[in-house]
Length: 104
Length: 123
Image 1 (cartoon, each protein chain N blue to C red):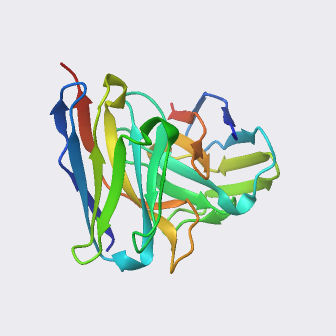
Image 2: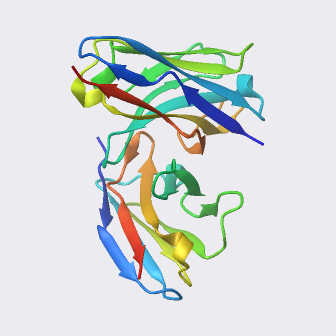
Image 3: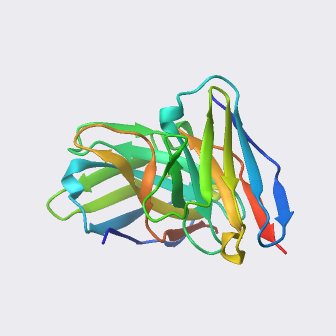
């Protein structure tokens, strides 16, 4: 069973700064099936990145996915207040525990 | 536009049963695999079940296997989840989701999600 570990648990940053979110798999996984989701408070999750690096339709280009093997990264550049959310990585039926991004 | 609307949630006693539904529109429902997922209050996301575009195959997460049944009606563009032997730990927001890929291929990437329906298992 694959385990996805996300770090850090929480990021507190200022508007305009950049954020780097990590997702580490317990074994090598196919990047084709690695996705990232954004979940704002009180809303369902929203697909952000699929295939490790492909932005979903309508998602701003400030969001960039990268990585392969066991290490994957979601980078958010030029943080905006609307980016306050929990971000989850996912592979097949497994989700990571999430990283909460707070914009101060 | 693509819409997924869950319904049928509520309060049920432990050991009871409930069926929740997902009405869809805006895409060729009969061409896509569909999923149910849930999120317990304050917790992370959990995948529960998958059904092929034609309903010919289903997959379940171990903790719900034998208790939950996923089904679909392509003529009504509707997805269902029948839940039985419910436990307090099944209390969660339940979401239906559309797979990213259609046409008989599956990615287990959840492209679109409904707003969810809350199921509370409590005496």
